[in-house]
Amino acid sequence: QVQVEESGGGLLQTGGSLRLSCLVSGPSFGDYAMGWFRQAPGKEREGVICLTRSGLNPYYANSVKGRFTISRDNAKNTLYLQMDSLKPEDTAMYYCAVARQGDFCTFRERDYDYWGQGTQVTVSS
Picture 1 (tube, rainbow, N blue to C red):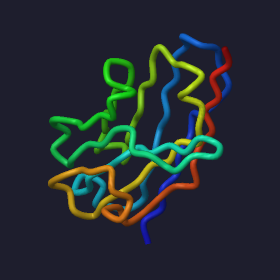
Picture 2 (cartoon, rainbow, N blue to C red):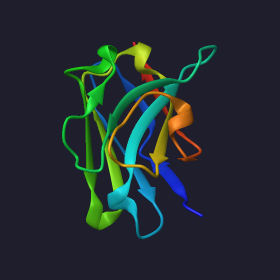
Picture 3 (cartoon, helix red, strand yellow):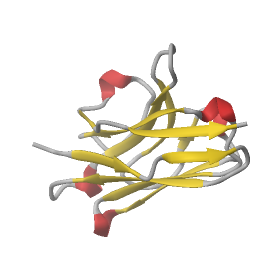
Picture 4 (cartoon, helix red, strand yellow):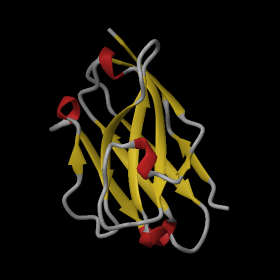
């Protein structure tokens, strides 16, 4: 069973930066497509950014383009989400998701096989 664990959340002010990490257990991390999702209070979970196993051509939600960056370190089985110029509307629980197929990434939750428990990001105005 693949385990997924997010870390790095916190409380910060508008305009700040934060880097989230997602550690995935098992030997096949390099084969997976990966995604970050978030869920704000009272809202549905939404896709933020995702990346195929190649690490090329990440797919961004319009709301985070130019501010968020995704990357992966296959040697460390870790996915990262670098968040800059944070806004109060970025406040949410952030989830890391793993798809066993690695050739495409989407914002459809059903395309992902494993999920972490989430890490909270709170941006104050």
